[in-house]
Image (cartoon, rainbow, N blue to C red; front, side, top):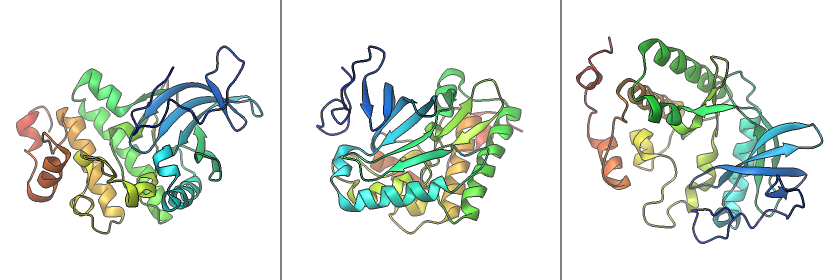
Length: 258
């Protein structure tokens, strides 16, 4: 049985049962293969689309948020906006299902690993690799910004590295906004990721494309040093540092960076 860490909701109980031994359930017309990720907003599932005979990824809104009309509307709006961004370095969204019991979106399944997983294995990275990955993230962000879409949660886990090709794909555009109004429901829960937030995000202010660029800078810092620029024992401590302090210079942490 697969259990979630989101509030008190039951283990993937929004899935319909299946009689296929290699599936864990069904969601709409999709056959769910396994749980591949979870976080404060919801879960990510690996699934099979029988109509188009392909593997896809499905991101659901957490049931805690699915019961909130504002979160549902924002999830639909931000998902549809993200679906309009067609770019080699942005994960393609195939479908949005806002009226399901638990709203979800269907997107391309990227075979590979996240930048977070890679850094967990390697620590800091070589300069050439940092430049290659950073440039591709920036290109994906630029494509979204050209359409007026702000990511709001640029972080290591949202940067996907595709197997077999030197291609980076950015995922989860705008979805942090879907839960902004209901995010502080439990101690320590906030929308976004503190270590990579811009100061205006940390202060709860208005954000624009420059917030994404600040977050990209924090991602680049982490690739250079193997650790985020702002650290603390609690989320609140990290947010204070984001607003009030400067990170340690990169070359003091990693002298190999030119």
